Length: 427
Image 1: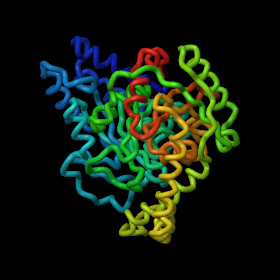
Image 2 (image 1 turned 90 degrees about the horizontal axis):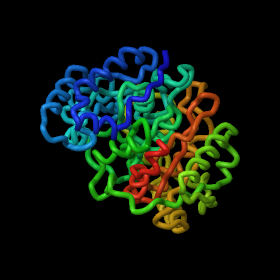
Image 3 (image 1 turned 60 degrees about the vertical axis):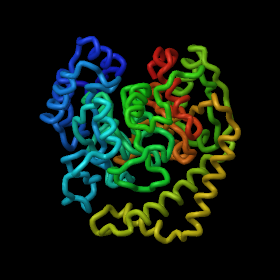
């Protein structure tokens, strides 16, 4: 039995519900049956709210007017995001005895209002950091991980147990597991998602992101919780110019199979009539990477200084200590340096430019880690929206690509993903 299954495109599921060919209740039953088939091996889910989800679905099926494309669509929620009635343990012993959340996180509340059905919660690494790795396996190869920290989100969608899932990204925790699991992702602009009910790690970067079978599907989910002024879902204002980013770090680390899959993706994009050209990175990606790490450590230390260090992983405890040792002066200097990098980087590109690069140097790891986040981190630090596209395969494993844009350019990036060209490419 294959552990990989396409749960369907949101545009198709939504159209089927609008026509009466599909009900939300039937779709929830389909998801529950698939969880029963494969999740014993994949282990993406922590809590499955079968009765609650079916009750939500029946109410939505009874509504005459559909609320939008998410009406009746089941979603999974990463276990650093509050869902009313469930504990948010963030895979940490320090939160083992935490009470169930008394209210939904703001993003979950917005999605319920848009008609999404909360099916349950899925695994994460501790506090959405590097370790410990949850038990979740990669549906493409159960000996590999799905990456992190949104391991359960990527694996749940890839295994066909749910069409959409919420994750969070502070470094590479949405776009990288999407690449490793052959799914799509959309992370809105950094700091653009407000509200409460999400366990913090580094507040300058923490952003709720979306998973779907394709990047377009993920953008549908992001449009359901993102601020209206981001205009995710607005009609595209012409097709973008795709700039293939070149940088010493990418040249040094990208493995041959990943490079071949990226070359195939470029052929498909050119064949669809898109303008594609190379562009050297205006700022060293490694410099951005190092500055991001300094800010993340400083903020993680200040955010979690009160944790019982005996009840968290040694890696997190050590990095909290490193962060606390970073002076306010050095932390502020890193913030200023990062802001300067952003200005210098984006000054080199126009408003219609989107940038393309591999999502990771290689395919999903078999060494028990969450994999190498070094490619995604600079795109997170640069502040704009980032999508994961399905680039191809290497030895049967998925290869992902990052398509990203300037801060606030969410409408332009999502508009391309919703275009007929992108729909035809099934990115």
